Image 1 (cartoon, each protein chain N blue to C red):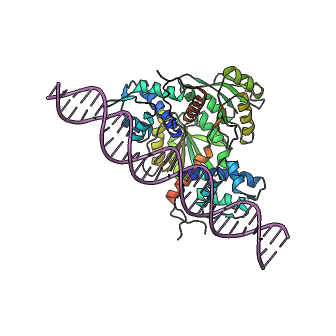
Image 2 (cartoon, protein in one colour):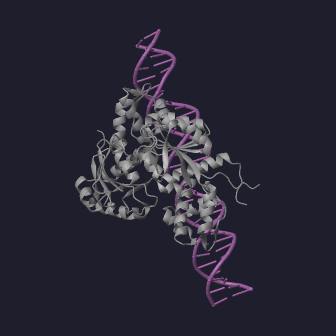
Image 3 (cartoon, rainbow over the protein chains, first blue to last red):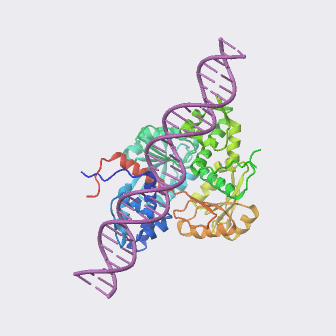
Length: 218
Length: 218
DNA sequence: GCGACTTTGTTCCTGCGTTCACAAGCGGTT
DNA sequence: AACCGCTTGTGAACGCAGGAACAAAGTCGC
């Protein structure tokens, strides 16, 4: 019994991932203890907010001392579900897909790509990061064999929805989408959208708002 | 007079960018009118929320009819400040940087890279997307000459802060950071963080939360 | 062994974002 | 010319996230 999971807010989860990264760095550097203030500074957040985030996973610090780096790191990793490396599949091996497949950061953060897929015949068979690019026909097979629960879409926008359909049909329950379209996924499937253009446009707006006095329409 | 800019919430700005993309697609498809319901569905948001977002830029629809696609598109583009193409510089031409430099989506969304930079001598001189990779020494010069106000960082984490310092010193006011570190920028500089590992870890958490019954620590 | 300092964990409060629901306005129709 | 239906725009309530201040607790020093 005792299910200490009174639902953690999604915003907190995102920050926990950041804390985890900072803690891993500290652990590699040989540090054994941190205070909330230092950790918050390194993560770019408010100390009080950090303590509140951490409180969601129960008391894990020592008053007057701080947090034990390795212990806290492991606890966050367990809560996030990345203690063990999780199998992912990646669809769309263009420029972005290649970059993702090669990105070492994923491996050290608890994720590994167990399948790279592309529809273009001339891309199939190439090796990226020690792995071959497979044809889409092998998708179901690989997902089933590896029990991959996370799919990453890095295809052009016009095929993203059909790729999403195929991934969910194959059993993938979580999707990270880089294509600039809103995906329609069945209930029970989590979709997260990363839109690079949107980020730039928000910056453009902030910059314009800061710079110009006004001078609108009419 | 009349500065109809009663500060638009940042969350709204991000969605406006999405609406803009959908509207551009509709315009290319020859559509001339849309209702809030249809637009909201395509953007993956609530219809009422969409109307409230749009209300921030003044009345721009016709009751009983809907929104005129081209007009609304242009108005959003003007508010976001992307009517004219904005010059950006990109630092770090590894796998991710190459993908970003090659990404056609930026060009059609009002951004163009006017300078690609890397510290590694063997990368300098290569051409990507019709542009040469320049040495870091030319950064100030290019930023000054092109009046680039947006900088994109796609370097390893350990040099991201120093790159950030150099960009801000050169006059860049907005930074999009792909390196997994919290950047420390002077006041007046907007920083936006995109962390690919964090997105995956949030998905891992959601997936684990959904799947397992419980079975925590002790 | 006791006191004081440091740091966590929690509580309150303020503000924002989101959602629902209604009223206003325009076009088409009779 | 007047009515009816459809869609926008706005007002209000709900819930959530963020920040600051306070109390609890453990450790170090004397």
